[in-house]
Length: 285
Image (cartoon, rainbow, N blue to C red; front, top):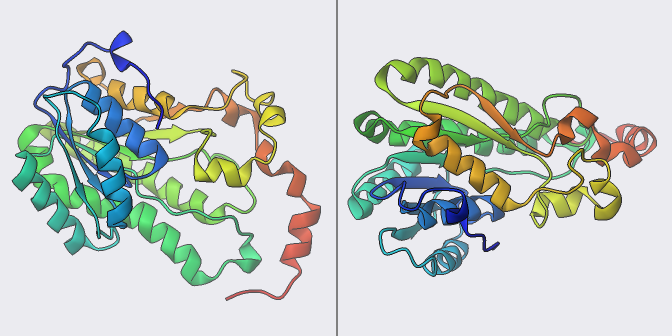
């Protein structure tokens, strides 16, 4: 986990007394979001499926050293189940007192062309990403109303143009953007904000390692000439939850160094020949 001093930019203690529930909290990006919030006084509830991974992240976050910020880990949770989400939301309130902020970060991804993707595989990604985001907000809704809270959905830029081998993720993330927009309008009158963060290629993540075989050549295609850091997403998170963003809702903050404007460079080598060959093989249902 990256170790950046967020206090160089953000005022110390701006989140004292706040609590954030984070699904996908043991993931590379979400754990850094949690670290940034804790540095600034926010207690966090790390939600995940694998209890061992959750415990490891909680141990790391426990070393942040902010006496005003607590961390708990709740494993064995399936965001696709509303009952599971209601349970962890309740335990979070029981242990930390309330929920002010929510990060919907649980996600599933793999590389597959349409021909080799089963209906079940497509459904699984949509259920984790989109249905999981809905269930997370639904379970936390009473607390969000009570505390005039804020929600951040972790989206992507894969649906801004056609990306081979990522149709399932693009469809799920497009749904998340639409959900965020609708909830921003519905929740605005009751004082609850909803926004998306769309990360670009973030170095060191599982997705980056799968999609980018040559980091040096890849970086030259990014306008800001480097891949993203998890701290870039963490800083965007701090901003959107802070009072500096109190009049921002229903937006997507793209954090990608300008990369999405360049088109789909990360699968160019496989297009069209590799893709064409795969599409002509026996289909998987």
